[in-house]
Length: 205
Image (cartoon, rainbow, N blue to C red; front, side, top):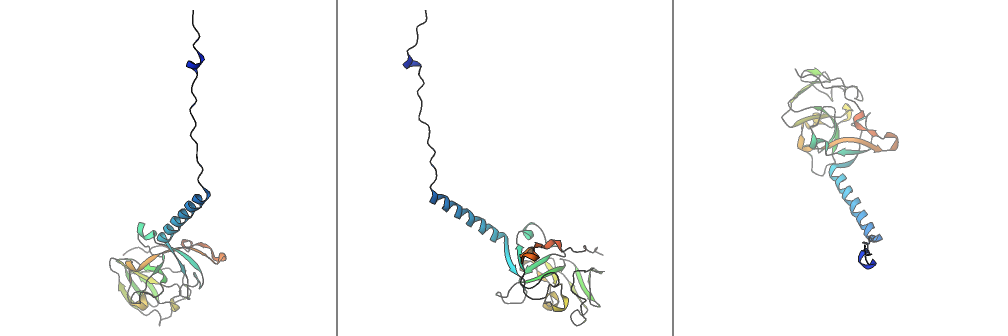
């Protein structure tokens, strides 16, 4: 005959459940502010804001437009022909505002101006983006041979641009701040800068 086990020996003792403590409201605000600050710092490290001033990049950029300039692009790869770059102008004081221009020549290229037209490695560039034909006084015949870290830059508004022609030298890669990637103000001009297409890289001869 089986004896019934006393209830006190079979009962399962219930353990107290752990309590979840909700973080205080002030702590949540502080954590949110810290997170926003960290994101803001990362964005500032990766990019800068730039305001276009002057007519040198017309008709593609106008005075008063706000751009986001990516520093990251050229940490991951090299500048390409046709890129719109913001850079420190050579031979200017360190507090001189940066310039914005289009890359025309890459390291190792030979850039020539002949009869107001631009040739790279002997091939004339097709440049549908320029504002107007360059006049002889602004585009005299000249030749530049670029070094291993040199880039030749020109404004799209050739008759009203201070660029590698006026510097009489290319710009060193170390002068380049970054690539213009987004135009975000005014709202009617919002867009991805890369949408301004370059017709293609000429073959090296």
